[in-house]
Image (cartoon, rainbow, N blue to C red; front, top):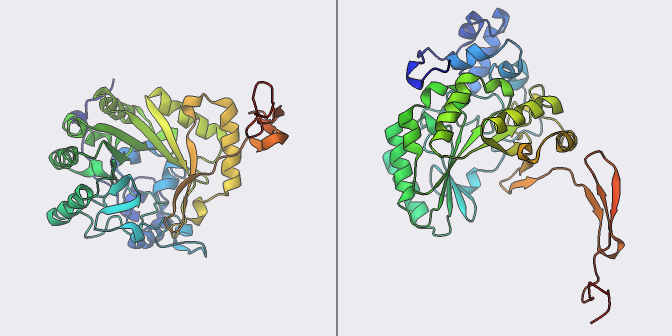
Amino acid sequence: MTRSAESFPRRRTLRTGGELAAAGLAPPERTALIDRAGAVFPVAVTAHLADSMAPEGALARQFVPEAAELARDPRDLDDPIGDAAFAPVRGIVHRYPDRVLLTPLLVCPAYCRFCFRRGHVGAADAVLSEAELEAAFAYIESNPAIWEVILSGGDPLMLPARRLAAIVARLEAIPHVATIRVHTRVPVLDPARVTPALVAALESAKAMFVVLHCNHADELNEDARAACRRVAGAGIPLLSQTVLLKGVNDDAATLAVLMRALVANRIKPYYLHHPDLAPGTAHFRLSIERGQALMRELRGRLSGLCQPTYVLDIPGGFGKVPVGPSYIEGGGNGGHRVADWRGRVHAYPPEPREGADVAGDRPT
C-alpha cells in the first residue's frame, strides 16, 4: 500500500564516510577517502535513497564518492557549460533569447557526484537573498523577449511550499512569461517532500511543467512513483532528463527499462544528456559515438514515446545541440540513402530541381 506523504518518517541524511559505512553503503576503509571528497564537493545521501541503494550498485555509484573523483582530467572545466558568462545578475542565466534559468537556491536533497555545478551547490551563500531574488525578477520583467522561466538550482523543490508558491505567483504576474518549468530530483531522492502543499505551490494559470532528473529505473520505487503521481494528479505535465553515465546506465537494456518506466508513470522522456566536463567526473564519461550507438539500439526496440533527444551542452556556453545518430545521407538530385532501425540502407528518390514542375519534372 502506498503511504501518504505525511506518513513518511523523517530520518537523517547521511553526510560523512563514517555514516555511509555504518549504513552499509561503503566499506570502512573508504571512509577517509569519502571525507576527502566531501571536502571538495558535499556528500549527502537521503534516508530514502539509502534504503533504495545497494553497495556498489548503480545508485551508490551516483552518490557515494570514489577515488577517481579526486583526480583532475586535462579536459575538465571549472565552468563546463559556461554559465558565468551568461549571468547578468545573481541567480539568472540568460543563454537563449526566449528563456532564462532562475536558481533561487543551490541546495539539493542529495549530491550527484557527476554534477556540472558541483563547484557551487551546497555553498554557504547557496540561497538568494530577498534583494537578489527581486533583482532577478526585475531582470525578467525588463526583458519582454523572455517567454519561459526555468527554475533550477540546486533543486527548487527544496524550498518551503510557501516560498515556492510566492516565486511562482511572482512569475505568473509577468505578462510576457508564458511558461514555467521546474527541474527537480526531489521526487526520486526525497519523495516525502512532495506534499500536497508543495504540489499546490506549483499550480499556476501559466503553463507549468516539471522535469524530473532520473538516471536509473531503481530510482522509481513505489514511494517515488507516488510522489510523481501527486504532481501529475494536479494536472502538471512531467518530462524527464537523464544523464548518460558510464557504469550507471550506459547499456541499451538499462536505458530501455528506465524510459519505459518513465512513460508508464506519465513522464515523457525529454533529454538524454551527454555528461559534461565537470572536474572529477572523467570516470563517468563515455564517448559520443557510444552514446549514438545506444540511441540507435533504442530506436528499434522502444516506442517513440520512450525516445529522448540525445544532447550535448557545448563547452563555453554555446548551448545544447542534438548529437543523436543520423539515419540519412546524400541529398539533392542524387537522392538520399536512409538507414532503418535495423541498419538496412534504402534509397529515397531525388528531390525535384529548383523551379521544376514536380509532377512532370518540366522546367517552368
